[in-house]
Length: 234
Image 1 (spheres, rainbow, N blue to C red):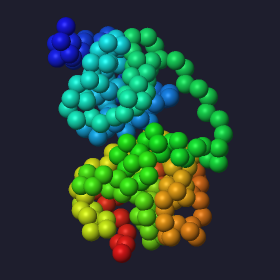
Image 2: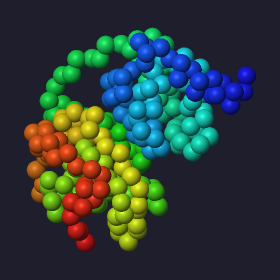
Image 3: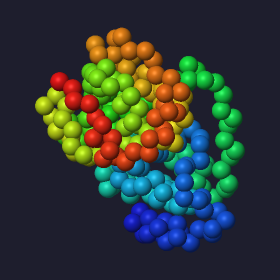
């Protein structure tokens, strides 16, 4: 059977999944690889499309990944394996396993690892971004945090849309919100970014805390409102 034909069956099957098997429209089940699913899939469509496809058999999830690659999804072999394992384990034909109990505080969260699974797919492992597509973070996040410490958590929690200029280059896209990350994870990501490629602007900044992130969650901002709050930096 051709990939096209099998993918067509995939789409039909997704609409025919019994209600008892399908996930409710909401966050993805927590598990290894979930942040990579958010990062990869939200580039093109709402995560609800993935949630509502729960119940697909393994071969149809593989066909779906193949189709997404044909449509422009760029992932490494290892990332594709991680996506496939997550989708077939947590959104496959069997009920997803119970989530592991959360342990530890922000200091115990590996910010670099969470960044690698959540942010690196767009902004790059070294924070250099992709010219014309995804803005760089290296040397820039430190300036943002130094100009307005309260701003930096906002694009992570609420996303960002609209035109921005960094180092003479213009970017005009949509960053999806990452509110599914815990307060500890958001704080750890920000601290990791500032430590690894925050530049001189990050030298004297105190680490972000989970309490700061929790406070920022209550603002209820839109992606365009986050842009309006973006500080002016040289």
